[in-house]
Image (spheres, helix red, strand yellow):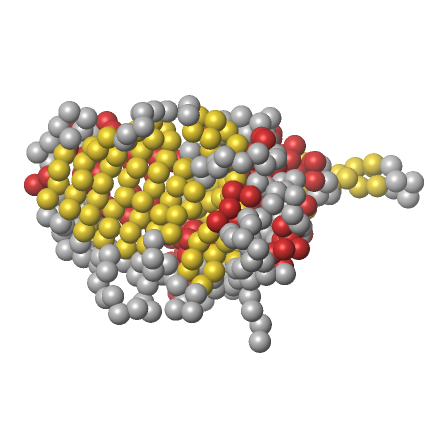
Length: 419
């Protein structure tokens, strides 16, 4: 499970900001929103609010970029440039980007992070905590040197000198078969997934494949659709030869004809009942989902794969603009799935950005689950939770407050100011 993510000097983030999913010592409802793992209480969901261009998407993008840096490091050649996209509105040129993640895996807490610029890894570190008060260092990289704990991280011994300036030490140790480093790399591969709620190109095919092969999670997804009363009774899949669109120019048609030869595509069909004048069912009609279902229904079907795969594996799903194209009650239902003990027995997590103020309710989210992004006068993004807010009278927001009304009225900040 994800505990914390820290980013600094990336896009609109200049100073370091931390998103935490560690539950604070408050008595807020619902109680099911928190899961206890050992001595740690962890939040199952977190919502991120803020005005347009305040940095919500940059925070989520930073999580994705960190993963890409870790998983792509092994493929780099000496001298290749890194994915460096710093804050540009200050005079601190060349300042490194900072990423750090804290996560729980097999009852062990790992803290891994690194700093880098366009050409070089400036620093890198890995610590573990096995339930004690003090964490243990496995390795620390500073400048051109790497200090390795020769008792706890034997896989790193003598590999320091083989690490290129632009490659992560962790990825080298994992490539050479290191047990601990492979575990950490594995978390970046399957522990969390970052997707867009606006564009489904990256996961639409995964959802179609889930329905086509009846993978685990398929039946739960269909039951979810049925509970929402979307109109169709069930989904059917159809596997066909891949077809090149007719409206492509001739040179592109020739190229894609070669690429798609022998390839299969999966299409989804929603089965609707047909009725007579008396309202009795007299048959079924199949709708091509892409052609005849609404944008909101298509999005729900596309999201089903990542949602129910995350729930069955107990992983973390991060969604930018979860509410796009969806009714607030449906967004609320998805959040309740993750907050539920019944539908989320493995402690899966959902982190999402949204503009939907209907979700700002003490009946749905605790105060420590609600986060805000806001830019200051220097256009730097600040990230803070509702628990960090101090109101004009010196108090903190109460758990019986009207969160939605207070947010719209500007009491929590992170709203657009229109002149």
